[in-house]
Image (cartoon, rainbow, N blue to C red; front, side, top):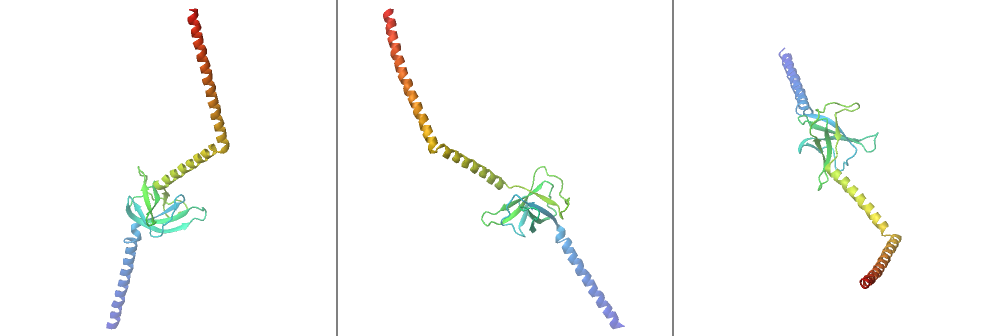
Length: 212
């Protein structure tokens, strides 16, 4: 009897330890791990993702609030990349929050910055149809806008150079020189006529004096 009771106590102790271990794992998962984060999806189409890897930082107002968990190329759209991130649940994300890819110029390592325009929208919680998580919109970085403007300026400069080259073509140069010669001849003719007119006026003046 004593041996059987001892076995019962040992079995009860083992079951208690197993239950405590399971509870600890659940607590770590829900409280100390995944439970502290919310998952979101970002669809990138306009921004380059060079240097963006799994584990890359996700920041909000310059503070690291999460990381990149996964990414995959979209099947239905050639230029779309689906990126899944997990963000600290204390970080307020809104419906007008957008994701911008930032890149270290020296190392080339990329990260994601979350930007919320003022005024902020509602808290982002709704999961669109066909998605597993709420979707953060794709933004556009200031560097990309500057690059776009530089490209436009470059295109305008190229067009201007082409126009100048066309203007300075052999045919146009000949036409321009012919126009300049014509203007010079016209000016010489006008000067001659002005000299003749001046002589005539002087003679008329003398005749007027004599008649007077």
